[in-house]
Image (cartoon, rainbow, N blue to C red; front, side, top):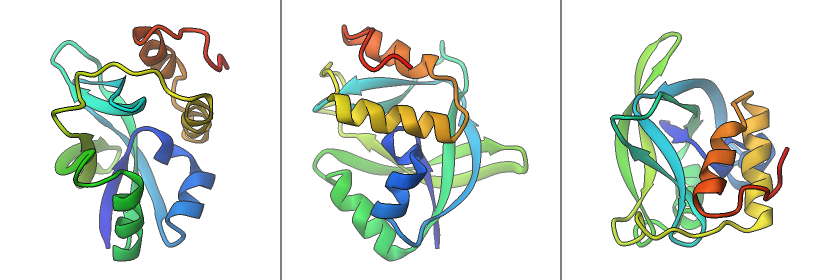
Length: 149
């Protein structure tokens, strides 16, 4: 079992139950000094920056077969890379695996599809996260009204 950090579409509990049937939601937490941006092919990327507030994320317990499915979905290692990050939770800090966009995509602004945005918004709703985080990321790529909640 491995602990995995979700911050975009994989916050969505229905999506995750289909993509990774044996994954178990653990808890929510935060990553300090982080923000979300739509980059590359229009997917979210978590970027660490000292001027930002803590970013809410979700922790999932995954098995090897779930990680294999995530690797395919995240287009690892060509589109996203894997790193280990510290997530602050109500029960202390947790080390967990996260997918972050590869360097060649991380500065390429791109608008998301409506379908992807809906999946992300549902995930934010599932986790009771502030939708203004999604609004800010959408606005930054020039689509402030896409799928307003």
